[in-house]
Amino acid sequence: MAAVFLLLIFAFAGAGLFLPDRAFSPQENRYLTLKPALSWRDVRSAAYMSGVEEYVTDQFPGRDRWVSAKASLQKISGQKENNDVYFAADSYLIGKPKISPADVADQNLAAVLAIKDAGYDVALLVSPMAAEILRDKLPPRAYTPEQAELLSRLRWEAPDVFVDAEPALRRAAADAQQVFFRTDHHWTTAGAYLAYQAYMTWLGEAPVPADDFDEKVVSMSFRGTLWSKNSLPRIAADRISVFEPKQRTGQTSAGYTVEFFDGAVTWTTSSVYQEEYLSRKDQYAYFLGQNQPLAVIRGTAGAGTDFANAADAGAADAGAADAGAAGMNSAALRKLMIFKDSYAHCFVPFLLPHFDEIHLADLRYWKRDPIAYMEEHNIRQVLFLYNADDFGGDRSISQAGAYLALR
Image (tube, rainbow, N blue to C red; front, top):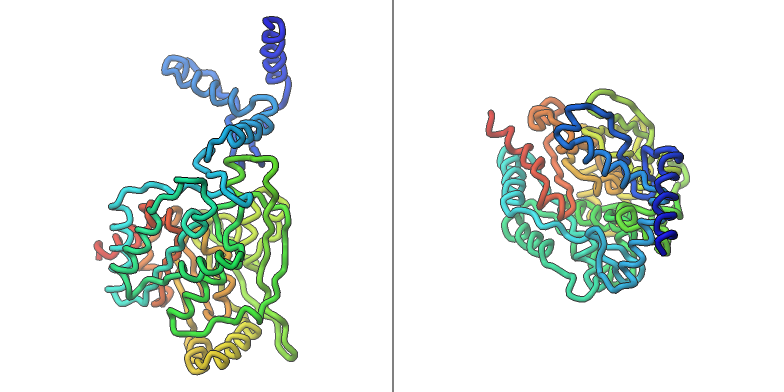
């Protein structure tokens, strides 16, 4: 036994010396610690040995297999979670809701209402996450009411601005529709479409009917953020799909440009869908790429024809043709400012027929005065779109209102 024990120690130590280091782990979707530089100051402060410990942990031979084995053993042993991810029913991995200080939601809601009081047309769409909508799939005694309490509070304190997508998501989940990924914390395109319907109804306009889209599957190999935390080997991959507008006789294809700004560099694409990410680990970035401080979507000549015609038809079917036509055929450019997290990325494509310009700002990375920006671009319509964890815990949202106090 002693000989086997020593053999294992020296075998793994030797493998660690000769195997090349990895800078990134696709399985865990994160960068790994590289060998720290040796310096006398770091040795004296113990920072060097701390760095060595992290380096050995991240570069341990066969790390991916050990991480998967650990998750599997925890599930077999009866544990209900690993790395704040629940082992849920029907092969779902469901993120554990975050416990956030109460004052964060207070400050964020105050910012939303302050912008509304400043004369902007403001909507607030806070989506519940899988832990709330799919609570029946959670392990016994795992459910906690944080998200339900937050949504109930927003309904009560901000009824004029709150867009309530929860009922539609809950009904769809009860009908066995997949509104959240099984391996990722985001909603699916089908879930985003339900939120889009809720938002357009809140605006008093008709959404494009679901029958006017064709569902196109673009990936069958998506394993998202929750799988990266767990790495259960037997969890099947998710599929990613998009809703494409059906082509009608005599109609031209919609056209638009997307301009991204990462804080230093600006670049432009011709699609909200970024095909290159389908061959990478972070496949959800197929929708609008990775989080950037600012993105602007502008319609080109003839843009939105297919969508607009489909939406007008839907408005007529719903008995609201006047509202739909007024919203999309206005002579003035119709602009929307969205303060958002990544839940907005697969939601935004549904808005293309309704707005000439859509400006998306991620306040975690965008440090410009948002009020001055909206004034500069003559934007009066605003949507705050966040998942419940982020709205309840992200202090950057309150920045949007803080700039009003400086005026």
